Length: 230
Image (tube, one colour):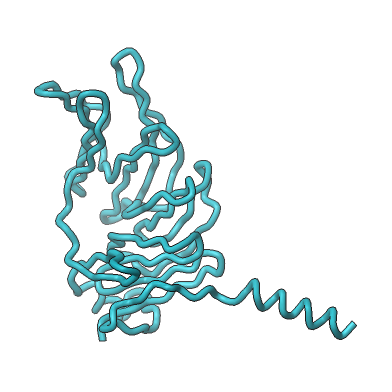
């Protein structure tokens, strides 16, 4: 009986211990407490510069966030272009040579492919507005149509596709989408801190660049860690 109890405890501990990342954080960054909403610590992050992260030789590098550009995806002999001008709107168009076809009005955040199909993200967080949507684009008999696939909790800001899933940071959440359903959702603290880049080490270890810091995300345990400059 005693051996059975010990075995159960070992299994419980091994399945609940957080995995250790093999990725190295910048040496000039340290872990700090997650700031509370509207706190001085949160405000300090909001006043910081926008910085993004990338992986070089298994080490995280921090660099200035590039200025916003249109999202583009080559299609047939032309290109799909999505623009996002915040409260001033945006649109999705198809451009081939001098010909331009408007497909949809809206704040287009990204255009991407998954399993041979084309999708785009739309959303906006401004004043009392905060929404996000995913659409599928169809092209038949030289005409574009679109249909909404799903609603998001709030404005999508950055995402990556990993194992046919969408790992996405929204305005204030982190979600994992599988077959157009949210299979995991973590309430974040980065409202108005603008997630801008992701490094996915594996399905349960992710790093994210935000304004003023780096966030470590462990989805299965719903754990968030924040690192800022020393």
